[in-house]
Length: 152
Image (tube, rainbow, N blue to C red; front, top):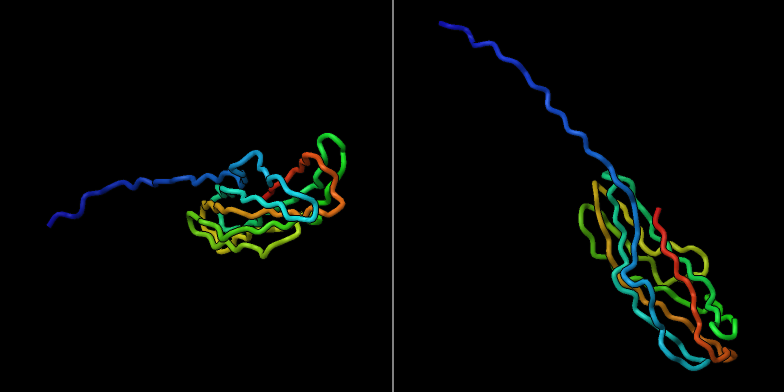
C-alpha cells in the first residue's frame, strides 16, 4: 500500500476594515409654515439617517439640539423652549435594535434614538415631528433657527 501524498497548506487571511459613524438629514431646510401668535407651528422632518460602518458591536445615540428662532428683519427671538421633537420608530438595516425617545424638548442636546444589540454595519432612518408653540407676544417676522444632529 502506498502512503498518502505529501501536501502543503495555504493560510488564507482577510482583514475586515472598519469605517465611520455618521449622521445625515434629508432636508437642509424645513418650513414650519405661516402661523399667528398663540398657535403651534409644525413640520415633519423626513429621512434622518444614522450610518454605522464601524463593523463592531458598540451601540450609538443620536441627538438633536435646537437653537432659538431669530427674526430675519427684526432680530426678535422665539424661544426654542416652546419646541418639541418627536421621532418615529426607525427603519433599520443590518443587525441593530433602535429605540426612539418620547417627545422631547430639544433646547439642550437630547438623545432621540438609541441603538443597542449591534453586530457589524447598520443604518437607521426615521422621520420626526418638530413643533413650536408661538407665544402670544411674538412679533411678526420670518424666523430662522438651526436644528443640529449628532451621533456618538
